[in-house]
Length: 246
Image (cartoon, rainbow, N blue to C red; front, side, top):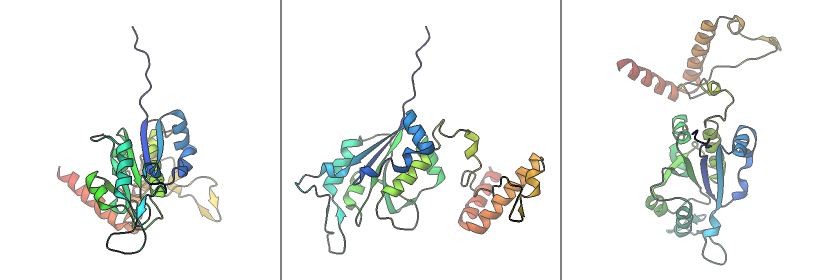
């Protein structure tokens, strides 16, 4: 007897935020939106204020020791986390924070191969450190700059991950040559018209010689990475040297 076809479980993103209305936002359109509608992934935006215990629904208080701004309360945020994230869950518990480890394509790929992720969006001056310690939050940053809150960072992280889920991109190979996938920036892209404001498409790209096209693209990717991202270039050289010794 043939087993009935069962649809695979969706990749699940749970976002803890003070502004659930910000989601799905841009994730509701284009590739991510179609995948969301198709059930390839699921998005649950949870309002942290729902876990406040006073009549004012307070989620923050003044920083201990003095200073400007407000700090997200440990008890409220911990209650929100515990309501949606099981202890020992295979889903990573990530706090979007400017002091976190920079997000890179390798971590994005890891997240895409798992069951999902729970994201905590900070606000104000940040989150009570005791919650980070007690709940073992993984702090992740988009870069060396400060946002008004973690929501834009969460949207960016989810966009990066969802596009890697099976079946989301039309051509699976379309992502293989993109920036960071090989440790290099992507090579320049061209399309018609053949001549634009006196600038022609490089002749090698219209030569029909696939080997030469591949070599040109690789050379351009290496040159761009070396010029614009010397940090990535050093990592690429170190990785290539390590591979040659194995």
